[in-house]
Image (cartoon, rainbow, N blue to C red):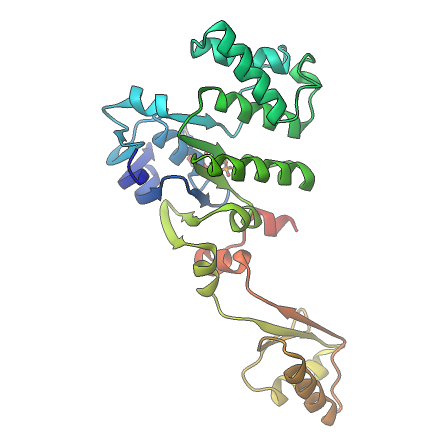
Length: 314
Ligand SMILES: Nc1ncnc2c1ncn2[C@@H]1O[C@H](COP(=O)(O)OP(=O)(O)OP(=O)(O)O)[C@@H](O)[C@H]1O
Ligand SMILES: [Mg+2]
């Protein structure tokens, strides 16, 4: 394979008169983790479906593993693995049977099938539960089994559509470790997520999808640099104190409802002491001081004008 795993140009997809993907360009290097971020309904799953040939694009072109998604669907499918947003696990079968079924579908020979299935059960720490029906698995176990099923064919490129949604922090971390491990084997990962922390932790590059377009693209650090820097947040007892503080500290931004004041600065201890002394000189006292450094949540808010579902929930 060449150095580009996925390249898309002007991809478009509409449902009726509703445009979901409005000219998407992508370039994803082999062996990297690419994360597509976006709120509910942004078109992440649509994007995955188009790139994995499950859905036909209305316009534009894309190459996946070097193959054209429109004219070389078979070759694309042979090179990729897809773990969908909703698990493909069959509840009535055991974990082992689910994996065996995948191996059979891909015509692995008896011995090889056994070997691959056993290795995957081991790698995903599912050996103990291998003989239990998947209906008895926890959410995290199902997710792991689902991903293991995707890996039966040793794909070069793996699409993971919200692999950790609904998982507890520990299972999420396990999943992250597995994903990192895959890239160390040279696998390219296309990951969609609503969790900014997940993208921050895993992705080499991130694209933010909003309103059918990629509104920003870059490394996590590049994206963070696009939003205003650190600030101090001071909270006051009442609006009189807040107003007084805002007058004393020009360049600060008051929020009358929250009784808080944002002051640009990185929260170094000298600057912080000087600032509090200045307020004290005017008999103004902050009840609470916090230091805020920009994270991807801020980036998201700045770029899309709305917070993520994750931030909404918090
Ligand atoms: N088969 C379909 N017919 C009509 N509209 C659809 C269809 N599938 C998806 N849509 C619409 O396309 C938009 C994008 O959906 P998509 O599932 O790609 O979003 P998403 O980013 O994956 O969202 P989520 O985070 O909720 O999974 C939504 O407005 C959805 O209602
Ligand atoms: Mg989706």
